[in-house]
Length: 236
Image (cartoon, rainbow, N blue to C red; front, side):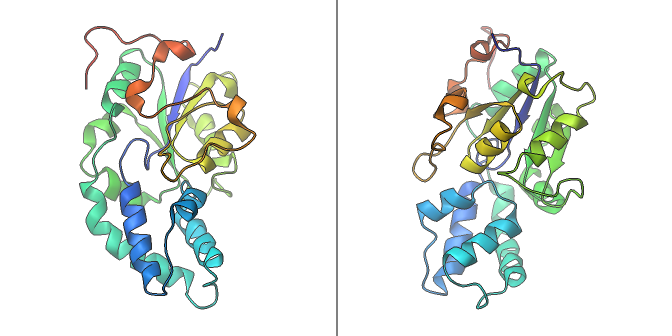
């Protein structure tokens, strides 16, 4: 029987519906070079810190040396900054987060975003941040040397809980991205994957290490991992 004592959430595409912005902006920038931001490429880089993702995109599309990574990132930021604050929460988020808070389950957000990006994305989601007070932003956190799919972001997050988990296996991670799922498994944690299967693949060879794969957080049953079940008063 699982003994889950702590929960870690990814941000983009899991708590907040930002992935559509990620796709639109990258498609716009790549179209200038007659390239496409395909669903396959999107699935490969989702969950990576931005600079690592951009570097991968340019290498994949054979634009390395032709397009400067920092310049691409700058243009990306300029375009995304207008769109990101308008992104809504994903279905089922507040119901789950409120439920975990009510039952005093320590929670954290672990994302590849920088402080600035995190502020923009969460600007209109104050209640969410009031309920989840621990945020680990691997985009510019000096303690994190490697981003997802390396386990570092989740291991650092686990260490920063005031009441630390006894073991990594006592932590449940919610992720939408292959890179994040690989990171959680590498960290020795339990993981629930909530992917957009139009572009995201379940990691090959790791299917039996994922607790469950859901279409939406609305489908999550806390009791399936030993957490208290929703009661009749639970709502969005």
